[in-house]
Every structure is written in structure tokens, then in C-alpha cells.
Amino acid sequence: MFQRARTWLLRSGIQEPGGGVARYYRADVEKNLAVSTEITGYFVSALFHIPELASDATTESGLAAAHYLTRQAWSAQHATIPFEPDSNLAYFFDIGIIVRGLLAAWKTTQEQELADRAKDAALSLAFDFLGEGAFHPIITLPEKQPLDYEPKRWSRSPGCYQLKSALAWHDIGRAFGDQHAMRMFEAALASALATHESFLPGVDEPEKVMDRLHAYSYFLEALLSVGDRPECRAALTTGIERVAHYLRDISPLFERSDVCAQLLRVRLIAHRHHGLPLDQEAATEEARRAASYQASSTDPRIDGGFWFGRKQGELLPFVNPVSTVFCLQALSLWEAHRAGTWTYEPGELV
Image 1: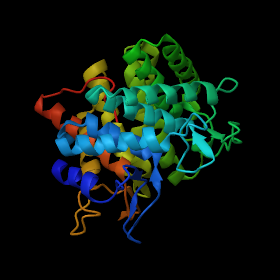
Image 2: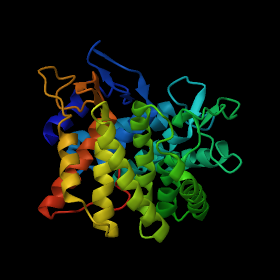
Image 3: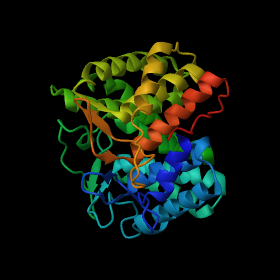
């Protein structure tokens, strides 16, 4: 499984020659979508954090992706990272994911360029997106003004899901002793804890609730870094139960592979690092669900990657790098948990 997935990540063409990674491959039209800075950030994190992917080739590909972010995606004119090349928008969430990817590469290679650009991007998060009691999800460029919120679209409104991106400040603070960055993370944490209960279900349409499970799982993932705090532990406990309930309720209609993987990762890490009880039966089922999404094909653009999801039992034609790396890490942790070879360290969550 892992060897085939590594081959897909490195050889399928999902990483383009310049180092950037496409949002996904559309098998129905045999075409990659445009390169995404956010997806490239996830790609970097995965290649440096998932043990089963480690090799000289993955280090080379991971560095190529990291250099794409520092040298091509970074806009010196705007002192931030646009949503996509030549976009006039920048996303709070995407930049946080990119910072964490650059830090993952820096910890292995110690290339100063990676650390410097990670710090620059973290400053953009702090100065460009801060609003009244919330962090703007999207700003315009070059004006750096907030785009109007759209309450029915989670990615266009502030919310608890932003806490995963705010982990960029947490990681910067730990790596470099930056107390200002830690204070920014604490502000984001307080806001997320105060508002997260209203995030689910959030909408009436079941398919959109499934999408919100993906976003809410970001919040739970971020809580793992502070899961020793009573209020965070309580939110993790109830949050796992809520996501599991909605996932199983909606899955016959629509299921996302990344939600299965996110829930399993949170379960396992919360259990191993914070002592939350593990529902072994549920975890086993979630591992099976995640593994079922790995593609098998004679086409190297497809084989070994993971499909995005299913609607009414039918696979959707999107081979997705984020689905792939989330599922790989979840299944890596599951195997380590069952074998008693757990080596995961805090901060290694893709």
C-alpha cells in the first residue's frame, strides 16, 4: 500500500516539473487541476512526516515542493502567499498549512531559506488577516482587505476550523521561542473553543454537512497539540463522538475519504498522547473505510493514489493528494498502534 502510494505521489504527475502540486487529478477527463499552494504545503509535510514515505527520492521531491513555495509561490510584492499563482486572493487557512510544511522540511534539512520564509508567512497571518474578534478567512490583493463573509460556506467565514492553520504560530513559537506567535495561537484557540459547538451541523443539506465534518476535524486535529488541557480534552471527547455520528449517518449518501482518515488520526493520537478511551471497533471500521479508497489501475496517473470520496456508493473521479496523504498517515498510525511500534511525535500531523 505505502510503496504504491509513494510511487503515485512521486511519479504520477500530480507534482508538476516546477515542484508545485496539483489540487487533484480528474480521471474522467484525464487532467490535473491547477497547482495549489495549500496542497503543495500538505505534500511537503507528508513527505517529511510519514515514515513509510521516507527515501532519498521523497526528500528530493519534498524539497522541490518546498522551494516552489519559497521561490515561486511567495509574493515579495504582497509579502504573503496568494491562493494560486497570479490570484488576487490570499487564504488564512492555506498559508498556515504552508508554514507547517516549510517547517517540516526545515527540521530535516536545516535550510535557512525554509525557516525564514515560514516566519515571513506566519507574520502575514498575524498582520494581514486579523479582524475584530476573528481572523478573516480571505483577503484581497494587493489591498489586503477582507472578502465579504458568506455564512453558508464554511471556507468563506471565520470558524473553529481555522485553528489548524493557527498551529503555524504554535509551531513557530515552539521552534524559535517566539512568544508573540504563541500568544496569537492562544487567541485563536480561545475563539475556536468559544464557537465550535455551533459549527455542526451548520446547514440542512447532508452533503454539505459531510464537507463541514472535514472542516470540523481540522479543529479537532489542532486540539491534539493542547489536549492535556481540560477544556481541550472535553472538546476532543465530544467532538470525536459528533463526527463519528454524522459520518456514519451521511455515508450512504456521500462519504469523503479524508473525513474517515481525519477521524481515525484524531482517535489514535488522542488515545496515545492524552489517554482518551479508544473505541476499537469504530477505529477498525474507519481504518477499513480509509484503506478502501486506494486506487488500483494500470494507469500510473491513478494507481496508488486515493480517491476523494463516494456518492451513493459510486467512487468520484478525483484522485486527490490530500486524501492520499491523510489516509496514508491514518493507516500508518493504525498499523503502529496495533503493532505496538508507536513513534509519532506531537507536531507531525500532516
